[in-house]
Image 1 (cartoon, rainbow, N blue to C red):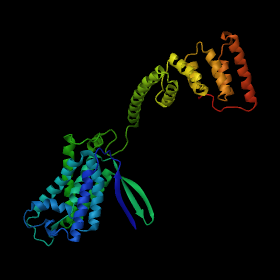
Image 2 (image 1 turned 180 degrees about the vertical axis):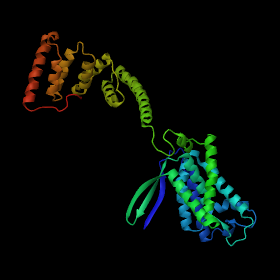
Image 3 (image 1 turned 90 degrees about the horizontal axis):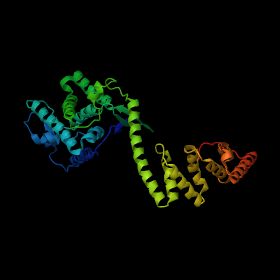
Image 4 (image 1 turned 90 degrees about the vertical axis):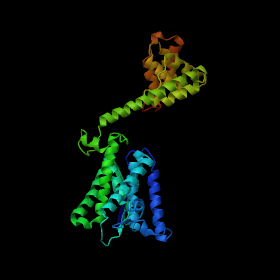
Length: 389
């Protein structure tokens, strides 16, 4: 056996489906009440044909169903299309649209059937209202997709169908039924007329700026550069927009972090300042520290014996302020050998030292570091990455 049913959508939703869930619960409770006999005079709930006008039935008939399959089918489609429409309107506007479509449809149907003398007592069901909501969803979110869950014996899975594809398929199917069977396809005709009410309502609300579709509605899609229903977003513009948004967020985060960093320095919390700078390394270009700030962090970390933690700051000082950085190079090379086990990096740093500018003690220290680095390499100490800290 093969079963499938819709359960979610990727359409942007700005409101919780409060009314949709409420309508589903109400339909289920009313159905159970009728089945158990707790709701009497069930025949008065349906929409009578040829027996005058009964305004109460315009409302009650859309909460009645002819069987469990009728109920389940309607509620599944009410859920997924209600999710889209209520997600854009909010609960009270959606409820007004749903009940309005159902009541107007029932009223027109009962008026048309005033002279009916056939055997069918009347009509019932929420299908017309749901088809109206489906038409609204197709206008407001045609390129969004509905996800179906399927079961085939013991196998399960999902597949996606575009909102406009699903709406066009089911509406077209009902129109075909009407064309084939004529007046005998009563339920199909009711479904089509329900969609016919929802379609202009959706367009009027869209034109009146009563709903926000973010430019993804049928009117924008139809007149877009890519043609009707072609889901091809401008990736260049989208990526540029996302990059700009990220840049603005990073800029704000870095500005706040820089202010906090300076406060840490003023309070003598060097370790906290260094940790903050490390955390912000991957945000934009990271914190940009001036020479005095770098020196303050380095000195503070050295005073605390945190030689390894000072290495990235010393490397940044050497790279950004190379003039007069020979002593820093020697000290960083020493840290590479003593604390970081990186002889190749130590030798690389020492190559950039101007020996003529070094005082005798530091020159002797540089030679010892170089000798120690070569010894470590001879003993098999190699690092694969000499560029990161």
